[in-house]
Length: 288
Image (cartoon, rainbow, N blue to C red; front, side):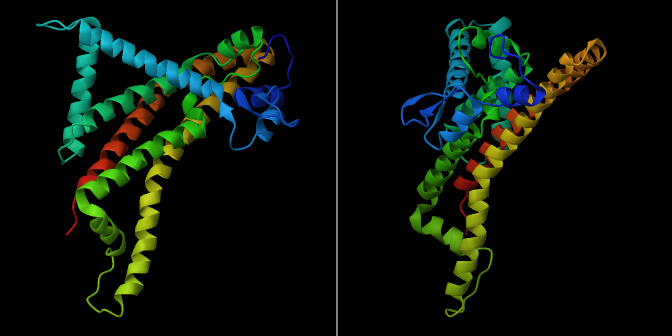
């Protein structure tokens, strides 16, 4: 909560679900929104500063520890950080070998980055919901969402990055003609020249929906699951203001949900990684 400000349950929930937003204020000036209403009025060109900060910080943390492990690598039986990194890389390589049939040196590093980065962002959901917002409020920062994957702007941005790779490799390995032919030549085929244009339109609609569903499935699945998890933590936190009995019960619920949520944050990172590998494998495959 922001500083010592007292909020109702509804205001508390709304406060914790509002990003630290930079954009054009109602008076025409550009700055940081101080209220939920100001943040909502900023429109498409607003920036969520907390999402950008935590995404960059966690990405830097990932790079730092893996770089440190690579600089201090030793022969023999690995231990500590090196052991963890090697186990992680073996896990990623095994999944790439099982899901990717082509040959591309980018896939394994991409899968490693996606899994670890998404996992770290999801892991922020286990931080007590009031801890960082309270610290931020004490220094004058009105809003602070610490789970980047509960921001659809971030999940869509990651999904669009994967989508761009899908289009790039589809055209690279199949050519422009092959890519267009894949969109217009299946699943309905005919040798009748009069029916071919009709079937091509139908195929384009069906395959176009299938193609566009890939980034949507990546982004919305991750966002929906993490947003729901964050909402449950916030609703449990509301119970602490309802007396000792509900407060103790809320503490038990929060512990149980946190333990269960460890599975969710790991599973969502794994699913995002696996779908990325599978979609890129499909982009590399040639259809005849």
